[in-house]
Amino acid sequence: MNKNKITQRRLFFDIEKENEYISEMNRLGWKLERVKLGWIYEFSKTGREEYTTVIFAEEGSKVKETEALAKRCGFEPIPHRFDGLKNVLYLCGRHDEVSPVFHNDSESLLRAHKLVKNKFITLGIICAVILAVLVFELTVFFIIPAASSGKSPSEYPLFFGLTAVFSVLTLFFAVLTVIFFRAAAGANGRLNRLKQKEAEKERRRLAKKDKPDAGRAVIHQRRAGAVDLTKQEQPQDAEKTEEKDK
Image (cartoon, rainbow, N blue to C red; front, side, top):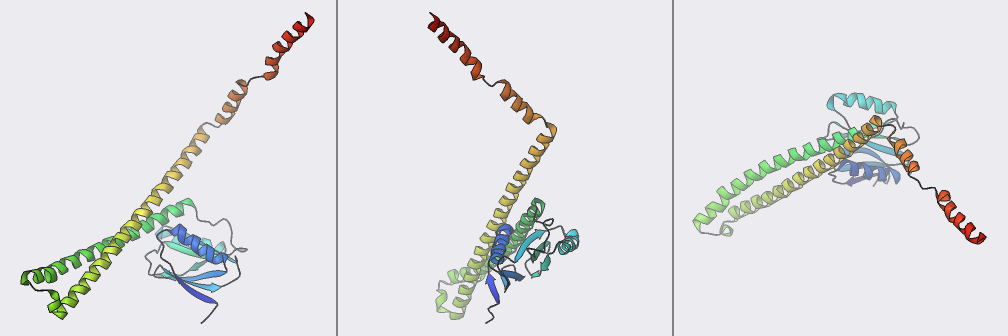
């Protein structure tokens, strides 16, 4: 067993959480080497906090251009295959060599969440179609014949075995369909929250641009409405002086 290499299996439905997981492995001294099937991660031993990883989503036509930019900034692409995320770049580089110019911005996160949503919607539809076919075959070829004959499927070992297999497959794809559609809904929720956050930032930026002196006006109003306590105390001091004179 090679102690300088490890393989871990993790299934993520959120690219941000996946990036946090890989970053934590980097902090512990493990460099990502490749990703298989979207959930098998291979790492090699390095120094603690020696490497940093960025998962960056880009438009299909700009993937090569972005990859070239990342290389100029000190990052190397990590191969990942058979995960359905061709527009996503796994980039790794040494902490002391990478440039802060290249980072995972909000536009990349928006693209990433959209890609994940579309991926799980596609997988959910595929599983739903397979599930529908399995339910149809299980009903027409197994349940209805067994009910019409009035005999238990256990009386026919082969028939009973096929019924059990189709039942298990039906349950399996039913679970997968629910998981994939829930993952798509979660990605859509994260996408909408990020859009709202960016829209709010844009509104604040435009408001600040349209009214650059708004902050100064508020400060001026506060100063104008401030109470001068020294002037309020003067009449009271005068009254006390008059009483002493009497």
